[in-house]
Image (cartoon, rainbow, N blue to C red):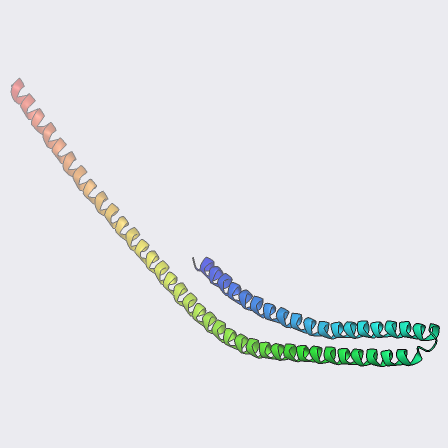
Length: 202
């Protein structure tokens, strides 16, 4: 009786532990995702910087072509080039500031998430350990109760068997006495019949 119960309690504890591992795996997955996003920010910033630099070089190539093909355009091209460089420098600076601010906020958010999840896991582990302790106590008491019930059932069954044997023995004894009385009555009846027959014949 106790083996299936022990198996049931063990399966329940396994389910609790698996739930704990699932929560930990989910949190670890979220951390990896955050790290991937943070690494993606660096890649995006590099791609943006590369795109801006490519656009700057393209405009410079165009201005060089204008300067080479248009006589007297050197001063105007030089001013335009300076203005373009200034605008691109400002754009690169704004991009760098925006990405730095975004990355800083993301790192801050990840740090906060790490702190919260560490605290959450500590509380969760404590609660699950307490739950498993209680679960083991319940298992112990339940198994003891079933063992007591099984023992009482066996004792009761033994008493019934003993009482049944006593009843059978008593019944046999009464039946034997009844049979003796019946035999005696039969003998008396036969004696009476002989007496009556003899009297009639006489």
